[in-house]
Every structure is written in C-alpha cells, then in structure tokens.
Length: 272
Ligand SMILES: Nc1nc2c(ncn2[C@@H]2O[C@H](COP(=O)(O)OP(=O)(O)OP(=O)(O)O)[C@@H](O)[C@H]2O)c(=O)[nH]1
Ligand SMILES: [Mg+2]
Image 1: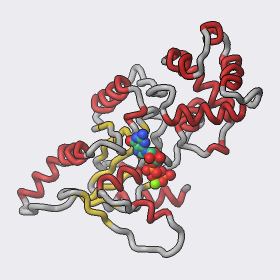
Image 2 (image 1 turned 90 degrees about the vertical axis):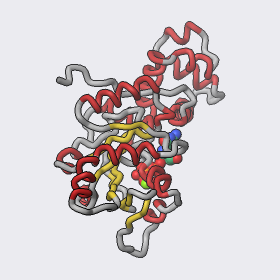
Image 3 (image 1 turned 180 degrees about the vertical axis):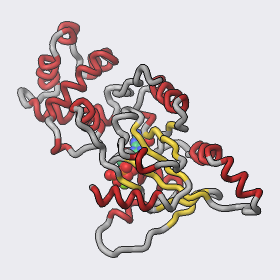
C-alpha cells in the first residue's frame, strides 16, 4: 500500500490535473484523506461516479457542497453519459493556465490527466470511456512490464494509462459498512450480518416502501427490529434460516440498486 501511494505521488507530478473519483452513493466515505496531502497545489476535480445508483437530489447537494468549498465537482454515469461534461469542466478549471500558454505562443497542448480513486469506484470504466477503447484492463494482467503509456482522449486530453489506486482509510466502523455495502472492500473483510443490518436500517428510514414491495412485507414486520426483518426476508427468499445466504443476496441487491437509488453519506454540517 505504501508502494502504491508512492507511485501515485510520482505520477501526479507528470500531470496537469487530477480527477479524483468518488462513489456518488458515499462521496466522503469513498475519499482517501491522504489525497489532499499528495495533491498539494495540483488542480483537481471530484468526479462522483455511479450517479445512476445514487439519490439524485442528494448528489446535487453534494456537488453544491464541494463547489461552495472551492472544489470543482461533477457527477457522471460512466456507463451511459458522453463524458463531454468532464472535458468541459477540465477546460474550465484550467482556463487561466491555457490562456497563459496562448499568450506565450503555445497554441495547442494536450492537457495531461490522471484518474485516481479507491478500488471499484469506476476508474477503468471512465478511462476506457474517455478514450473510447477497451484499454485499461490490459494493465491488470501480470507479466511483461511495459512503459507507461499516454492515451489520447478527444482533441484536448491525454490520460495516464494506469489509474492510481488509493485504499480507503478509515477507523470508523460505519464507514467500513458503507464501503462494504457498495462493494469497495473485499467481501471477506467484513461481517455480512453487520452490513446487512445497517442496510436494512438505512432503507427502513429512507425508502421503506421499496423494501416492503420487493420482499412482500407486511406493516407489522416493518415496525419491528432489523433482526426480525432479516429473519422474515430470509424466509421470503426461500432460504429458511440461512441468514448468511440471505444477507449475501441482500447486499448484492443493494449494490445493483434493486432497493432503489440511495446515498449513504450525509453532508457535514457546520463546515464553515
Ligand atoms: N451503474 C454504474 N456502474 C458503474 C459506473 N462506473 C463503473 N461502474 C461499474 O463499477 C464496477 C467497477 O468499475 P471499474 O472501472 O472496474 O472500477 P476501478 O475503479 O477500475 O476498480 P479497480 O481496478 O478494482 O480499482 C464495474 O462493474 C463497472 O461496470 C457508473 O457510472 N454507473
Ligand atoms: Mg481498474
């Protein structure tokens, strides 16, 4: 991990701007707090990925929050959007630098970009989409070391081929549960039942109807404890008393958005 961090630090020196990818469902919990220290004065944009899975109103609030705090931010669905919006945002953030270059007679210089983010946040998907080729997976294969490549994206950008992976860094168990629920940390690293009880608590509060309809639950069950709720859902799924299997299924359903769109992080209050 220390090695990965060193590599990220080295690579950041080579680029003009950094795209910090976070998951729109948990924008703060999916950031790595060490990043600001690494970035120093490098321009950066927060890209909230997977906006199709997050609560749209909350995503807007998060973007406003970041922008109000001086951090440019943008939400995308990398599977569908054209991603022109990212290019526009980059040009906007670097407009002064580009103007200075023009004054000095440098007319067209591609902007060097690097994506970074925690595992599974969508770095490779975004990179592939921006360059419109399936290139990013190639880097995952072990074997021959190849020189680092720059990938052209549109007329204005060139991307570093290896996105920087930053592991989430957390002590708060709640953040751990959020990361587990959305698939950012390995399934062997957390207790499924803790995660699933947290998820049930969240959906009971924010989207009870979807939960009720999906598992054909009656009102009384909805008023009971999350443990009782899990027992009933396990039976409804046909797993008898195999809560482990039911928990696994529930987590997968949450990840795919079958219980509706959701945002787990709340905007911090008193941020001034
Ligand atoms: N719904 C949705 N899924 C996305 C989006 N972006 C990426 N994904 C999915 O998220 C999963 C992880 O995407 P990757 O691009 O492999 O993530 P990564 O950050 O490169 O992951 P690592 O290489 O493990 O660090 C894949 O199943 C993608 O299809 C998005 O905007 N919306
Ligand atoms: Mg990847």
